[in-house]
Image (tube, rainbow, N blue to C red; front, side, top):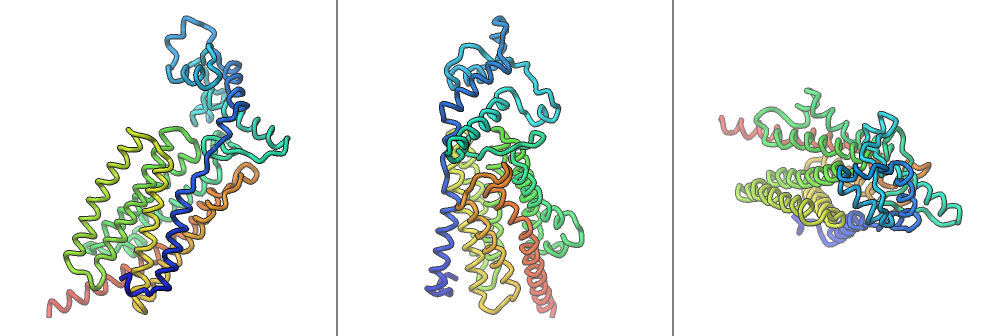
Length: 366
C-alpha cells in the first residue's frame, strides 16, 4: 500500500511520524525535587508535623519511611510517626500522609520563593506544582481523563449505538470492537485516578493500561486492515493472530522490565511513541490507498490529524495556569470531544463491511 501513496505523501507521513515520536519521547527532567531548599524544607516539616517522640516505638516504624527521612532529608535521626493521620477524611481517603503533606507544602513554598526572586517555576517529580482541591492533585487532567472515557462507555453500554458501531452477531469485527471500548474505558479510568492522586500504584496502573490501550488499538488497526480487499488468508492470519501473539509477548516483556528491572518513564514513553506512530501510519496509509472508495474514510484521517495536533500541546509545555491547567491537561481536554468522530468512522465502516458480507452471502446462495 505504501507504493500507492507517492513520494510527496510519503514525505508528509514521515514528517508526521517524526513529530509523534518527538512528542512522546521528549521528557523534561524535574529539578525542583532535587533542590537543597526543597529537601531541607521537607525534612524540617516532617520533624515538626509528625516526629516519633517515643524511641521504644522505633522498631514499629516503616523501614522505607525511616530511610526516606534518614537518607534523603539531611540524614535526620528522628523518625516519622506511623500513626499520624490527616484531619480531613477526604485527605485520608486520597492517601495524603505526613510525608506527602510536607512535600506538597514545601513544593509551593519553594515555588513562591523562586517567583519572588524572579526565577521560573520548576517541576517536582516530573510534574508542575499544581493546586489541589479536596485532595485531588490535577483537577483538570483528572476531569478531562474522565470525559475521555465517557464516549467509550456511551457507545459500549447503549444497545442501539453498540449495534451500530460493532455490528450484529457474526460480524468479524464485533468482538474486537467491543473489547476496544472496554480497554479504553479501563485506561481512562486509571488515568482519572492517577491524575487525581499520584502514588506508585496509580502511576503504574496508568502507565500499564495506557500502553495496553495503544497496543490493542494498533492490533485492531492491523486486524481490520488485514480484512481489506487485496489481502489473502495468509496475510489476515499474520496481521491478526501473528501480530496479536507478538504484542502479548512484548507486553509481558514490557511489564517485566518496568516492574522488576527499572520503572523507566523514558522507556515507557518511547514504547508508546512507537505504538502511536505505527497506529497513525497504518490508518493513514489504508485511508489514502483507497482512492475514492469509502467516502467515510476522511473521518479516520480527520480524527487522527486532530489527535496529533492536540498531542503537540506536549511540545509547548507550560506551567499550569491558575495552578490547574497545563499542556497535558489541555491535551486531554481537546481529545475528549474528538472521540465521537472516531466512533462515527467505525459505524460507517461496519455498515459498509456488513453490506459486503450480505452481498457475498447472497451470491453463495444462488
